[in-house]
Length: 105
Image (cartoon, rainbow, N blue to C red):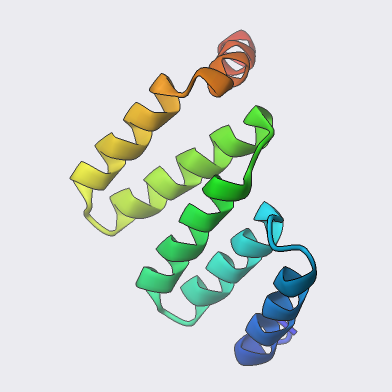
């Protein structure tokens, strides 16, 4: 539905999937993308925050936190960006992600 531009239908489908898989970060990411396409930044951010909450794997959570920070930056929320980046650096579960990211640079 999303690829066809049927955003309302896409959101309905994602919500249905969330009932069966309430802790799936990818569903929240898809919903964030849909809200972005609809021009609803508040819901986009809410879905990104839920994706962060649900992401348990550090290699998944790190990039989602960075995406959230980037989205906050585009919206002009510099305090929110600092808060998110501080969380990325302070989160002990992300140490492995930081080491892997440093080794790629």
